[in-house]
Length: 287
Length: 110
Image 1 (cartoon, each protein chain N blue to C red):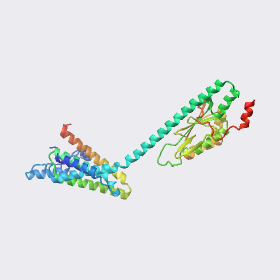
Image 2 (image 1 turned 90 degrees about the horizontal axis):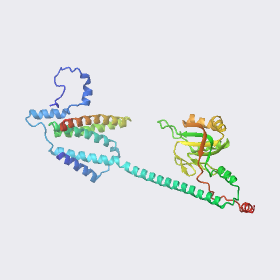
Image 3 (image 1 turned 30 degrees about the vertical axis):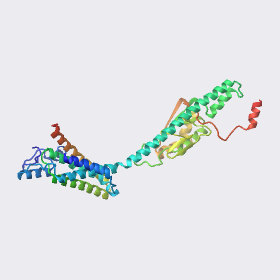
Image 4 (image 1 turned 60 degrees about the vertical axis):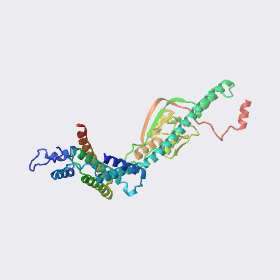
């Protein structure tokens, strides 16, 4: 029987004695308690095993089952509650996102209709070129041109990373303002075109541009004179701000000048309160 | 067979009664379960090798659970509770696996 103790004979020097611990771990003999009690019973003329039909054993197994199910229940209760909440939140976010996308496409089609109708009217109150130029400046059309792509990302998570070592809405505001001041003609952050009424702010932990939450990394695409923009981002005030972000907060900054970048049209252009004064409209109609 | 029925009865009892475990006892539960499992597999192996003894089994279950709980308690007092728990899990896990390997050898000859 292989259940006999291995180190039986005294003085039997096993050449692999130093490996005994390792062997015991990999291929352990039967628990010595069982082995010795079985030997004792054998010597007393009883069968080696007591069998599995004793009251003691039944009570122990009931207790073991109880321990098992109680432990399982106790230790897994907090998770389902969290998971349910998380799933619900995810679902809500997804629904809201889908709704937002739907609205964006709706805006797109409506704007297309407006353009069509304007074209069909064919009584241009304003010169078409002038209209196009205004649309370009207002961010109502997609634009193409040379520019720079600036990518910002949070440092990879590590044990000593503090909570403020990440890209803040304030950073994006400062950078965007600096770029507007130094030759940027159109800017988009993660495909969200910035206009004169755009907002960049924090909602909880997320950066929100024009009511749309952005996910990392933040890709700021700027159209403008490349040399001027690069100068500003290397040695201007924006440049020193970026350097500070990089050195003090470990934020990953990547700059790449591009021959041609495309920015989409802004999705939100309407004003709610501001409107064209009556006089101007009347005088325009008179012309 | 009877121990298996007992085990199932215990599980059902736990599910039906679903007692609330006091908070201070919670850290010991996972370690206690693993220690009990180690004793159970040891017992099954002994039964297969025709050397099972109910008293030894009960003592091994109790001592395993107690010692495991003691180690966790000591670890918590010393501030290394999680490391010691990991150590206990590793050692008992090794024993469980090697006992299961022995059981497999007996049942399937492989």
